[in-house]
Image 1: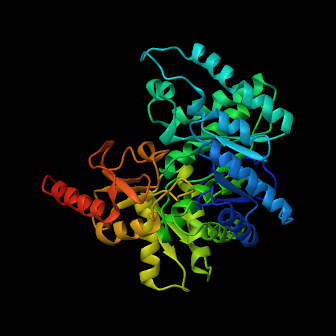
Image 2: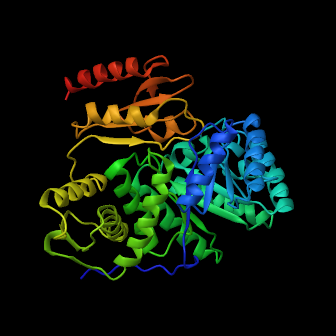
Image 3: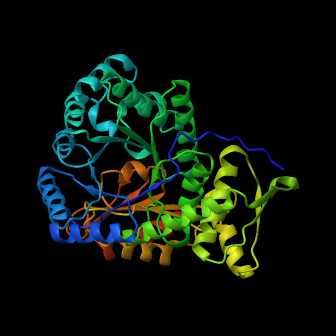
Amino acid sequence: MTQFLQIDADSSQGYLLQSMTNTDTNDVEATVAQVIELKNAGADLVRVAVPGMKEVASLRKIKNTLLEKNIQIPLVADVHFLPKVAEETATFVEKVRINPGNFTSSITSHFSPLIPDFENLLLNAQSLFEICKKHNTIIRVGVNQGSLSERIISRYGHTTEALVVSALEWMDVSEKYDYHRIFFSIKSSSVKTMMDANLLFYKKMKERSRVYPLHLGVTEAANEMEGRVKSAIGIGGLLLSGLGNTFRVSLTENPVQEIMFSKLLVEAVQDVKDANFVSEKNDVLHINYLETNKEKWWAGVGALVGKIWLHNEFKDLKIENHHFSKTEIERLRDCILQICGIKKTKTEIIACPSCGRTQYDIQAVLSEVKKHFSNYPHLKIAVMGCVVNGPGEMADADFGIIGSTNEKVAVYKGKERVSDFVPVQEALRFLKDLVLKSLLYL
């Protein structure tokens, strides 16, 4: 039997479930309706995109409308690019999610030292901390691999260490301002990177004798089985290891489905703490979780694999469950081996869950991409809602689609945009030509 590192949990007994609206934030009525729908589904808090000052006013109306309806649910303002937007929303919402990269200046030299830039970071963040102190607003520091500051990337690259350094800097900032109502989230579309970074950050916090709450999530998980299993491995593996206070299963679907699977994941994590699993000879992992609900079964097996994979390598997987057919078991096995990079059987497709910034039907486009481009095990294709995290999160994809305004999208080859922003069907035809041409050189 393989022995696993057990981390003591500093979190509370339960987990807070989060989702995010995908309506236009300026459509107050639609966003209020979706917040209520998510609350009724079981969400403990709801995040809303606030890209600019116009959306700040709309979010205030959303908050007030919910209060008028006697709907009590915490709102998280999701802010990118503009610190002023974070400062304004912090006066009336319960939590503000900020992007660390937007509070630092661009570097002028590859050898720029960190210390002067940290002083600049302190200065830029001062107003936000003062406002949050005054209004008792929680700050969520959202460190995403796709939107690290140029200063951090220049020194550490797009690495696990870079993610942790960025988070630790904001831990230092919070200590400087003596404000501790802070959550941290460290995310990546790479499940292993996300898990390793959270584990390392947790250990660094323990060394400093101050452990802040963690929000967990795998970005760009996509949809259907792949999205659920990818989230189960990353989030569930960390929950089983004692990390995590809140989490979001990011699916390119109706956000209510995120909450439905999140609840199953919590149930499965409780179940599999005592489930039978062994590491057999030749590094073949054997899992026997006899659950009858298919998605809960995915969640439990994924969580077990995640915990094991976080601390130990394995080369193959055997799953047993007499409640499901051989085909269903093999499909789950292939999905997990694909996610873990052990056996590639189809195209790796990542996709963001979308939010109020997305201005095209990303769910339909993802469906088309999966329909036409799933049979290329050597390729990675991304479907992204907008330019906020899109270019960064899909940096290692071979090809990608990123949305703009008015139902227009652009095609990328690697990090380079290779088309104008055009209607979706035109972009899909262009993408097909690129993929076919790439096959000629394999």
